[in-house]
Image 1: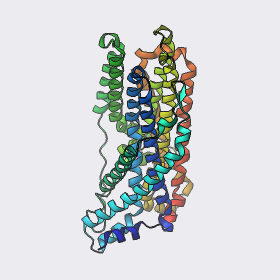
Image 2: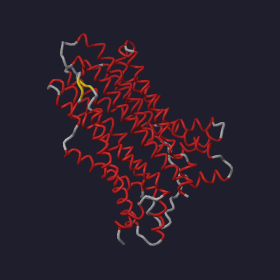
Image 3: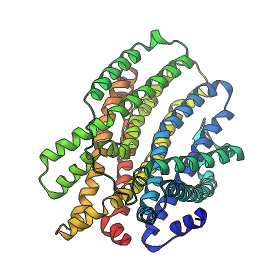
Length: 441
């Protein structure tokens, strides 16, 4: 069996798979372009004076770390959609006698091929967007040519995206290769334990005490930044742990209060897999976290800049922090919107038989689509609000007064988060079951 030829036959553009293929390639293009632009922005900070680098480079590293979550979610959702678009063809090969290993190889080849095409398109998108990104101002001047990365870094980024696609494809097709008919058994999804909430509350309390006594923990600016970055990173990790538990509780609450078919079906979709629901909106939660923390930091800098020894580079720091927060939010929501479109498309293909059956039983496609939309937006809103509250508690000892005295910064951040949620709502329109399911039949 010629795997490369067979892989091309299965992956070639055809009408019933065209929409998922376009979405997948676009997702990889966006992923690689954003990754390169972020790395280029971080690389540009190395051109600053040595004293400024000591502050800007750690902040850039924090932004890159925070963006890892939405970037990984975007890559995983693209790989999952690619796999689901070829589900039936790969299952048919198993029925015709192909081994599990052969099916896995085909799945990986398709994912790698799609990722490679999308990533190369992303490199071109990066060079197309670089002139615009170079206009972003830090230290009172545009980034300029520093946004352009060395060729070897671009090559490593392309390789990394392709490897992520291959790993995601293998993980996403574990159930497919179990039996020739690719029948995945329905299992009861375990409800996330309440212990996660207990651990989260305790961790937030510890971090609150640390941030309240920063003066005794660290005196030097470099040490202070490291402590704050480490603390916020740990806080984000802990809040991510409680995410599925939060989603499951919100889903159970919505199920009890459901008064319409849309609400009932949406709650059932959330409870079908709280972890998967959380994975789709984790980027929103992270963006909310970044918005509160970054906005508070920018406000705090404005409040204290008059007390700092005169320094040309420090004068720009408050505005640059706000710029960095807004850029991070924009990138995060672009990733979340793209991953939402892919995840919802994959979920629609997964539930194609369910949606078709409901429609044949008399449920309108508009009702099915409304339930699908609610199943994403309810966790998204819950994540945004929940993480905003938790991160506010964390930064309260650091910048509570600064936030009050700089309302414009707060309003700017709130507006950016609201715009991001609108972007997500618009992005999932592409996964309308009435169009996607019927196109695949």
